[in-house]
Image (cartoon, rainbow, N blue to C red; front, side, top):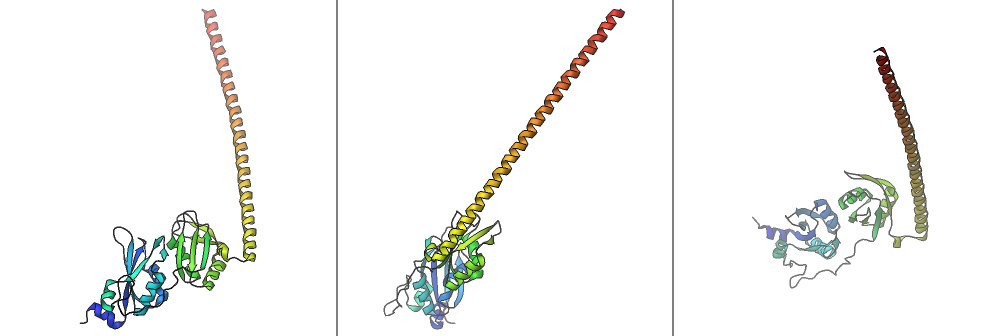
Length: 273
């Protein structure tokens, strides 16, 4: 039986270590990070008692693992800088160092640009409960996603592997209803401002003006209904006050009449005596 480390070396497979992952990382999320570098044989996510999580990714070909390290080591992911290196297993089997540096005699391809994709979209109007996983799952229908994140103000960002996917996301999902297990909301999807043409900017300006006008009209209608409700409530209150005063007056009148009646009867009894 060939030892596991030797099997890796003989088959050309290589396993990499991926550190500084979110505590709720899923295998699918790791696959989305590394699928474009080559055929993946296995993904093993680890969630320790304390963050961060980490994972091991096994590539079918050694050079694909090298490319993945060069392409993803040091990249920001969910607010943390990824640490990507050869796992100890692959290091011992192939002579590749654990921190991405080759052993003596091995040469690596030139370093890749570590910037993320430029094919990004800006999302607004997300519900407060939306997570980056929810956003990633929602926009997956538009194409291959490299990166997704959300903030606490209903905003988000999604980056695709191609411009065609970016355009498809804007065309199909702008002004659509976003849903997660807790809430739903209508969202806006657009390019970053620096990528917009003059025509795009003019269209966004008109859209912003239209939406602001609709918000003002909605607030005005709401205030009108509120004033109408206040007037109705005040009128009802005055009406109830008048009715209460009328009842009190009638009650006092009946009380005086009853008292006079009792005094009259008492006087009659005295005269009889």
